[in-house]
Amino acid sequence: MGLLQVSVIFLLSLITMTLAEPPGCKIRITDRGLEMLKAETKRFVEEELSNITMPEMRGEEGRFQYTIKDVKITELNLTSDLRFQPDVGLLFEVQNSSITLNFQRRILYWLFYDEGAINASAEGVDIFTVLHLSKDKEGRLKISNVSCNASIAKMRARFSGTLGRVYDFIGAFLTTGMRFVLNKQICPALNHAALVLVNQLLETIPVRAEVDSYVGIDYSLLNDPVVTETSLDMDFRGMFYDLKNENETLVNYAVNPIVREYDRMIYLALSEFFFDSGLFSYFKGGLFQMQIANERMPKDLEMLLRTTYLGTIMMLNPALIEHPLSLELEVTSPPRSTIKTSGASVAVNCNLKVLVLPPGKPAVQLSSMTMVGKFNAKVSMKGKRLAIHLDLRRFKIFSNQSALESLALIPLQGPLKTMLQISVVPLINNYTKRGVQIPLPDGIDFIEEVVEYHNGYIIVGANLHFRTGLREIIERKLSGETDNSI
Image 1 (cartoon, helix red, strand yellow):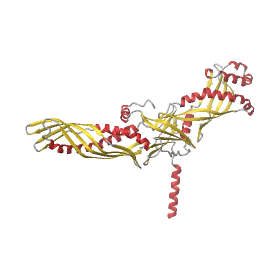
Image 2 (cartoon, rainbow, N blue to C red):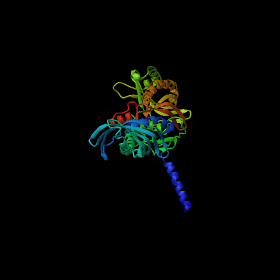
Image 3 (tube, one colour):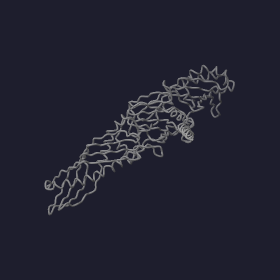
Image 4 (cartoon, helix red, strand yellow):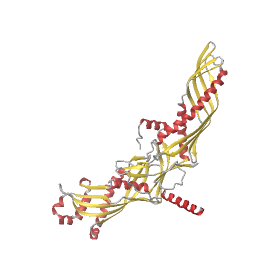
């Protein structure tokens, strides 16, 4: 019985591994990337703590009656660190730091009344904050929980005013209360900053968004991020879809990209599925169709087509000889990408039709051909947009009507390839250079990118650049503004 149970568990685990959806897109943020975030995170935390508000305090001590109000944090000297917390998320730690405050006092002692400013400093400030990272129900990266512990070792007060020296002795009493109140304010401020404000920043990462009027992109996380001492790894679906039929998508049979590097701040890995799903979606959306006629028809190509099909035109109707010609291209099946260590390519099968366009009458077909083309694809990054540049390398045409006509088409192959390279490929590249946004928050860009090609996937290693501060990004998100650079 025990052996049977073991066998069943083993089979179930194999089935689960087999059915697990591989990612089309992976992102690794290394400890070098986290190092860049430290200064920005420290500045953000200092801004949050400086906005702490404290209630008015009233009380008595012997013959003294006091009121403390208008508490303001005037300076923060934080010694902080930001690092990965394995299996959890991020750890932000502040050690042996200080906070300077200023507040107004009002004190009554017997018949003497005095008011003035108090400058106080909280010393030995320690803050230990752990941000728990997870995938929400929409597949978005979010901070799901915050563990926070803050302590202040001591607090000193310096009085000013006419009776400053007289009641210095009650300073310990006042600062003890202030220390207690301030300590209670630190963690709620950081909890709000993480769970509300930083999650607002994470909401700027696209999860399911339109790329253009034809397709959308799905960047939902497949599982919770994997955190080690040196990296944060995230697996995204990385799949395009047709906006008119979002449920008709390509099945991912591509290899699982493997990222082994840690030298750069960030690594982006994209499998063949990422590109194939885009090609599939554009094909289903009807984008891969083109007509070359009239002013779009190069004169040399038109002359060559007329010479090649002169006999056909004369046999059909000599009156058609003066009418313009048209070349129609239609991709007949979804193009497929291939990524190897030598580079990336895209294979395309097209149907080419040569037609005569008599005015006011239906087009007359002269020939139908099959074109098999292979494009070299060069992947590049700008900011946080991924773009592709295509270059036609291989080109063959065959007649759909007879082998004899295929032989007659041989003289057309060279000029047609040149025409496609000059007229059609630039149109495609002008479209693809717009690129598609990768899953990064607003205000953060790739710089110093290096693209590496592997068998079945590419890896883009890069460093990161903040175009603006965290607070500015969050405020823009709250106001409804968008990042114009994406």
